[in-house]
Image 1 (cartoon, rainbow, N blue to C red):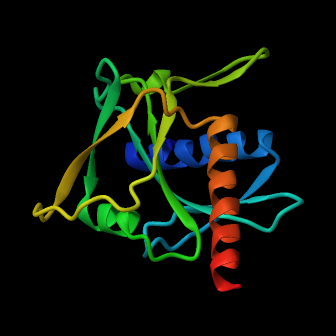
Image 2 (tube, rainbow, N blue to C red):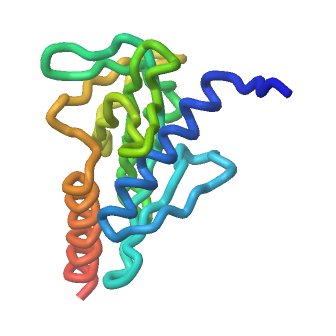
Length: 171
């Protein structure tokens, strides 16, 4: 029985797998949301410790989007507007998994490793200006902003700091 899965579905699931693996290594858990209406594909929380969370919009591409110092990614306006708002109960980040152009190179596994070729990048679009475009806006993400354990720890620290600032203002 041949499996006929659209390549975009495979890319989407690889982005979830990538983020889940990074979160697990960082000591966090993923709560995957099946219905994405507010540009939230996953919520990340620590397995134990502080009860903070961050929301992630996950995207994946095998297009040639790598520039010398950044990646260039067309983001739908709806996602852009959802991500740029500062009115939110949790911090909200965009994570873009950049895959190899050749589909057979996206994931390689053997007895020694399970490897997703290339990596994901992240950006905080909160406070970004509105745009006149109606369908998409091309965003630039610095190539230094690789989504890894350290990046997730930075995101969680930002969420923790935001909660503490709110509590100080409320006192």
